[in-house]
Length: 257
Image 1 (spheres, rainbow, N blue to C red):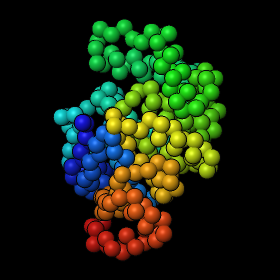
Image 2: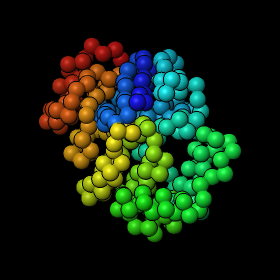
Image 3: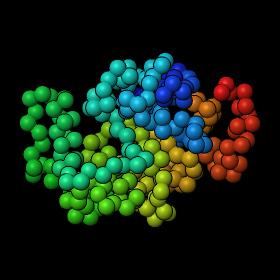
């Protein structure tokens, strides 16, 4: 069983330390929610885990499948079985959803076996149709340019479709609920739930408890000032919903700035 293990992670952006000794572990088959107020470092963690060059790791380790992934490029982390669903997915005019996904699948196959000739068009069509049916998506979606003219909900559903086709072992959802109305949130959450199982661990990064009404976590972690300060079960998210972050801040006011 694969496990993502983050040890004493320190990350700076333009000389300012954002993550200040963060520890966290996520196993395959588990759903973890990472919650915290604006500025606590949640998205910094997500981008750091996937190798964004803007974020400078100054100390710590991140282990996955026996490797310190901080030594790997972003595409190598993806090939290893990690996935990031972006908070603000970018548009790629001229590239259809289907072409984008087939290219991504072939890149993974090539990384695993340099002699691989890529997935055939008939096999890819069958795979994509199966995944879109699983996520209750109209087949016409595959022919649209990636995120071009998409609503907020459609962009997030496209991210979930990517996750479905690439089948990662660890998926990081960076504020997937951001900008979604209740109906879109429910649809996207149903997609995530359809993909959950023993082969994929999920780290749901969010401000609010509302997405956790649909995606049920096994564990909830609270971030303040660049660290995880509390961990518990789903009841911890319900406590935040009722009391907000002020009680947590007061309890942990000794956390160094």
